[in-house]
Length: 212
Image (cartoon, rainbow, N blue to C red; front, side, top):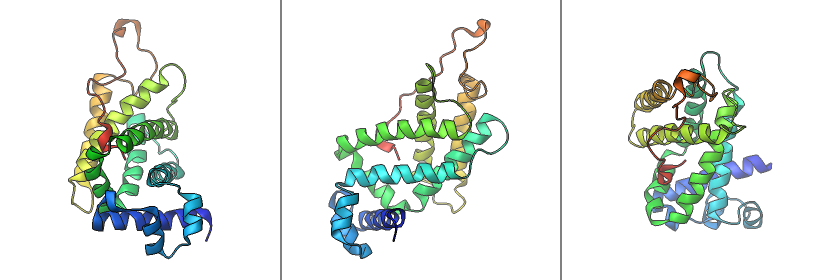
């Protein structure tokens, strides 16, 4: 078993435990035992549950980026890539929901996930062919994080197999960002001189407690 297979097996086991007993009562060691994995290797790969979550987020990014950008407008490309990232959450749905339920009582983990999600959004922009660099790059990433969090909130209550409610929420959030700021279609470029007041950030602040 290579490292990727090992990590996937342990992460999956950890989320199964979380779904059964709650995230606070889940440990890397218990997940390794459930998956039949050696504890010494689990310790070497995952020193803490927080590291496990970071690796899960990284794997979700890789899943979203592996298919490459689709054709069409920036909004359509972002829609596709963010839905691929939702697929990673969906594959561990019950455990991820248990994690979200535990975050209000664990502000350190919530803050860590918020920062990690912001880094992930920069990668999602690049994966969709939109630069996350330069002076405006961090603003674009923050704007996309607001879109992502709105989508995740919808996903938590979406019980349909086709995730139609989640897709509708993502489409609405992207359209709203496009209509109000215009930052998606411009790829974050500065507006024309007659639109000098453009603010690339939505009014809402992201809620890191829902970061995935």
